[in-house]
Image (cartoon, rainbow, N blue to C red; front, side, top):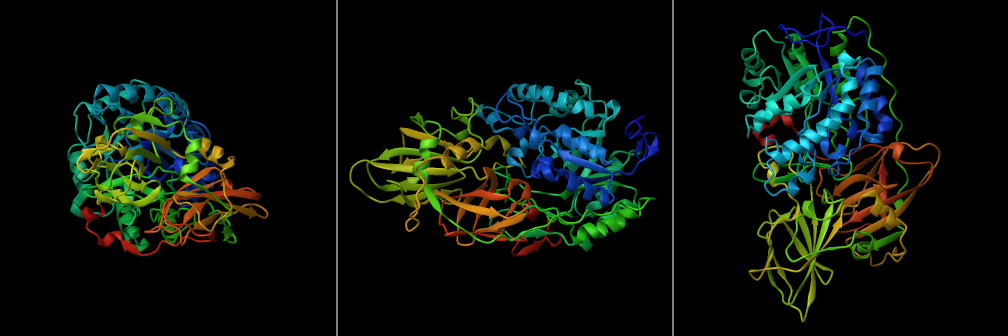
Length: 605
């Protein structure tokens, strides 16, 4: 790529190196795709006729503890962008600091919420200070990748859909300055949906729009706001995400193609969000809350042109035919598909109870009142970010337990380690059985995912966030265990002597262990858990994500690079009911589907 003048927006058409340039973009998030597959997915992007990769940058992964940065291995942003450049793709970076993305807290680190007065996405001093320190580090990583330095990055997005938040008019100029004052000189963009366009701009920055259908004259609306400027759909939603307890969202290929064709015919630049969705591995999924809290599923398939496992869908083929018309040369051949295998079922060999696992957590924190997970003194005082937290105290009677809606997000309730029910955002009361003397009350609370969009970001503390009442009296005197299920904990668990082989009466909640033997080179597969209830699955120490029988997701993608030839360790954490085996499938089962194109947009939200 020869370098003269970068991406410019000085007329009704973009120019790059002084020549007219039509952005044909697609989003693939490096943090949602196993690193071993980055190259495969980018090759498929190139073969589809796209010329630009876009990616978000998740602050919460890159600074998991305050002041501790990680840009290595799976999070090697520089390697990812450099790989795109090797393939002849340009890059648009979307570094946030807020990214939405159906990602926990929209990518903001949970430790920001340790400050009870925190105002996220504003010029509140505590937020400004944290952003400045993060951008010092981030810009040192991305600056060599800029066009003017000989790199592939031709534009950088300022924040994300701030027009839908707009709590502080000084905030967007602050983020713009965060980039420019550190030497980012490429074209800056903002992106907003139709509603947010009215509020979300910042002076000297090109506005772009996010949409799925061309109603409301949305593109004309953008053109009227910015006469003699190039037009871009920064997020053309190629599908939609799923939430637990709902149907799988699909957007039919023909409906999508009609809109994309019209956008391109009008000379408008486009970015397909998502081109390839990938997976919310671990506990990183976000949630929606527009009156009702709805956590998102582990799969981020998105009904995108490339499926969660990297398959070229009918959408991909239709888009490739369309994009080929915008190229003078024939497109590169599409790489052959990854092989997959439905491994034989594996039988559970051992189990270990939740209560025995407490030996391997950090020692419990004693507190008179309940403490939310972010404010626990763990992780070098950055608090607990994800997973489960166990709260224990003694009670001397039964009666009515009332959460006052202070459980975030879901609690299993135990008396003397026998489950007596659950509490969540819908169920606030539970009757505890009567009994003699002092008894142990335990609440296992799961952070099901922090909201990633909307006005409620400041209210996303998890665990127990206020008083819990027994017969109208607040409970006191807690022992609090952090069960984040990070690799160190899982390793200690695996090597412990507490595993039991008697499977007649397994203790639930608990951990269940099986071994998968792989002959020859590993292949991609999907784990299926019919007969199980709710929990998470770990393979060779990697957290694949959550499973929950309510669906719509009834599988977990297991990429071949995370398996090895020979023996593989699978651990299922299970809260409700366990089966004696784990099944595998070659293809995912998405269950019942619902067509997003037939839904009014407000119901999607």
